Amino acid sequence: MPEVLFKVDLTKPMTEQEVPGHNRWHPDIPAVVSVNPGAVFRIECKDWTDGQIHDNDSPDDIRDVDLSVVHVLSGPIHVNGAAPGDILVVDILDIGALPNSEWGFTGIFAKENGGGFLTDHYPKAAKAIWDFQGIYTSSRHIPGVRFAGITHPGLIGCAPSTELLAKWNKRESELVATNPERVPPLANLPNPKNAILGKLQAAEFDRVAKEGARTVPPREHGGNCDIKNLSRGSRIYFPVYVEGAKLSMGDIHFSQGDGEISFCGAIEMAGYIDLHVDVIKGGVDKYGMVNPIFKPGPVEPRYSEYLVFEGISVDEFTGQQYYMDAHVAYRRACLNAIEYLKKFGFTGEQAYLLLSCAPVEGRISGIVDIPNVCCTLAIPTEIFDKNILPT
Ligand code: ZN
Image (cartoon, rainbow, N blue to C red; front, side, top):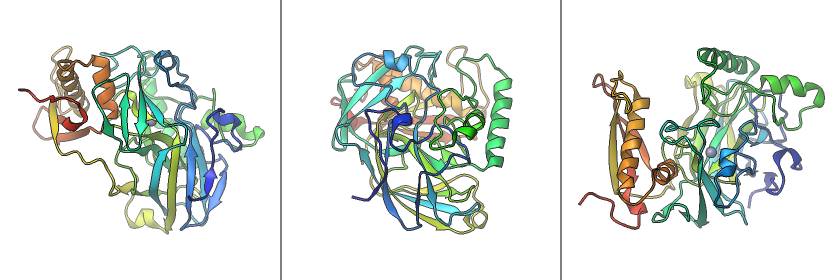
């Protein structure tokens, strides 16, 4: 087993860990450990909510979740020699659940506390607990399905520079200002409440807590991309913005469907990630890199038969025609799949949770045929214990 460079005790909140992680992005959050290029090591992570969700049958913890706490991350890791303009090469050598914590959760957040892709249709909190059996999972809350996970970190990336952080905060504030009362909000702006900033000195705390970007959106550095294919064996190329790169990660998903549509939509878990890191000097300019690039690994569930649902950019409430809107089209594909699954004994909430976390494939199938985008959602039929094809 590789050396564990960041440990978590699941009985304690992140603030009480021997070495605390962080839940905001800021270049001044100090690194907790340093490694050389070529190093192989293990990082342990708490689940993204810092243990707020429990293995029981009540969705009240999902309804009442305090989202100022998310995402609790492990790191930052200082990679010796990495400098702004370099590429940090990160291999995900292995990833899995922690011993004695072989379970995860999928939630639908309430509309007034987080929401999700289909929040206008499913505004109430719901939860499914998943039990793991090796690579497989099943849920007492969604009977009739069992599948192999595609395990990955929902969130991984390097710290932003001061300039990049300022750019994020400016553009996201401008967006929120266009409709500041919206529920859920258009973006989550910096919020000092419950900020966790690792080993940052007290004198610096208030300033960094006020400036630190929330971890919710993916950005130029990667971050919360929620890409299910960053699984075992993936190699990710990250732009480096600060000395030492300051790599952090968390939000481990046992499994997730494309889109992670219910927002707490993967099978969220605590776990470990084994990593190998290396540096490509001057790689950002050399390869014209803006956002990370990655090469998926060779180990993924092998499903070969799918039922595919189509959606187009026409609003389901008003019938309004949108022009080439992939957001609307993917929503319609998801809703069509949910309505179909309801004919097979699932509730709408169960189907929504399932599409969020099972290894479903989402695609932009056509984005040129005016005025409709066609998005598709492909569900592996082998995950069900009965035939779900039309007969
Ligand atoms: Zn997650």
